[in-house]
Image (cartoon, rainbow, N blue to C red; front, side, top):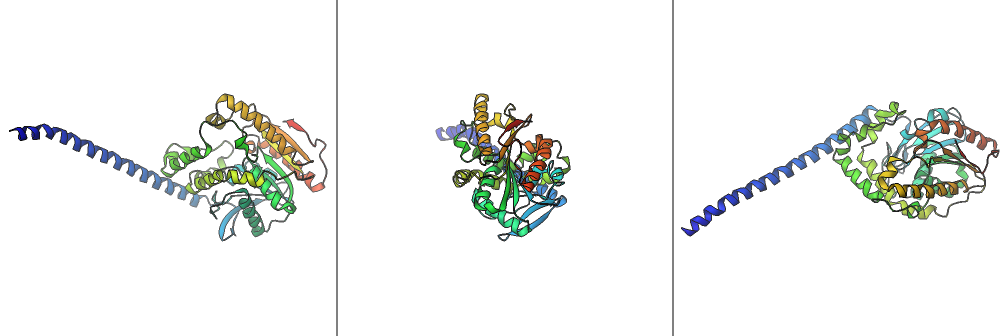
Length: 356
């Protein structure tokens, strides 16, 4: 009688345990199904946009892999546009058409970005400079060139100029990064690499696309929306971006001692330090944003002094993407800079810093 009683007493507990187990299994299965479904949906959507909106320009074989470059206009020196972290050629869409009225302008995608396929695991500044050099050769771009780079591309411009000094007729930095800047900035709320790792997995499983992140288009870039939709949530883009972040210290070591570059013409565009970007507020406290802005200001002045022929313009009302927020300023000032490079004349405002 005792054994039967114990069995009856344990039976409800066993049933409850079975229910909990099957519930857990069911929930886990739902998570797996949603994850797989989200990943498939994102991959299919990305493929759809990339087939419907093929990249303009041409594909060139570099080191056995295709690289994308989009050239417009005529004239020399050619202006080569280098995008910032995680960006492709579309970020220059508000300035390339106007600048092409003055000279040939070429935007391109670094390996793993946009339409350019990954070439190697190395994404340090010297490797990227060598890949760009090979691309320019494959595309038949005549030297010397003017390089214009945004954000992290400022480091890549320095690497290219140090490795191929005879190729470069001028440099244009657009709110550009400096070597080892992360060691000078105040601590962030979370490491940049950690933020991108989270973004990567949100992209892989379609969470970013479901949230609408993949179809957000900056005002003025509506015409490029199809290309942007095809690249924003491309998993390989996230991989290449993460690889560049991981290589930042190495890139800084490679470029920390580059310059000064003699009398090489240099133009520096800087965002308005009175504008607090949402991106800044997401990684720093408001107090540290102000400290970071002061440090950034000093580094931008340092860029101007990389040459005895340098000047700087602070873009009033602009955030980090000056080429988007103040395309009018770039469209006005860069043609003047190109004409000065052609003529060899030193601008009357050489050495100055202005707010415009």
